[in-house]
Length: 145
Image (tube, rainbow, N blue to C red; front, side, top):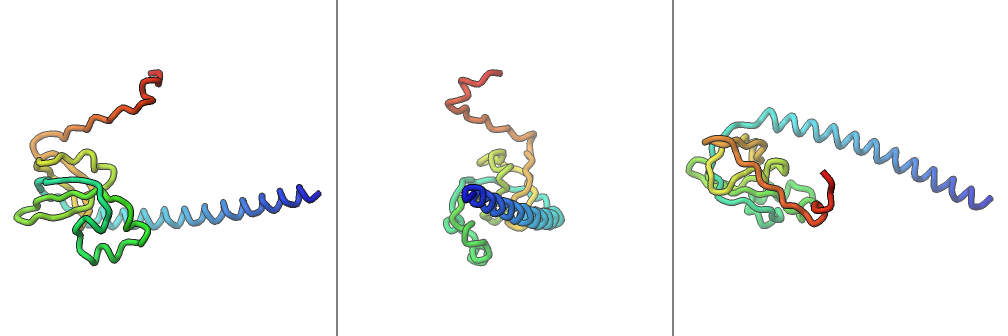
């Protein structure tokens, strides 16, 4: 009898946790969609020469202190895809979208869609961009095609 009571209590706790996670996930998704709409509304196409790109922690990027202060504390330790580019006469440090970071060529000129300091999209100025070759892992030898 005690075993059933313990299992029932655990089941009730799991259902409550799943419900809370579901509603938090929906709230976060709505927030992310609103942010994406703001980014789409503010993006501009800019021609730039990519100097360097790498993943580094936020504090080492050289971004203004205002940007670092506005980021959540948990995100300050995460490595961000950072691009150093020459936009017109100025050299700027920009944050790239994770999806397009691998597409950005180094030491080449590109037309990028920028929203503030955030690179949203990239196109080649002189032809299409080369898609990077994905590194094959150890287990790819064993996969059947």
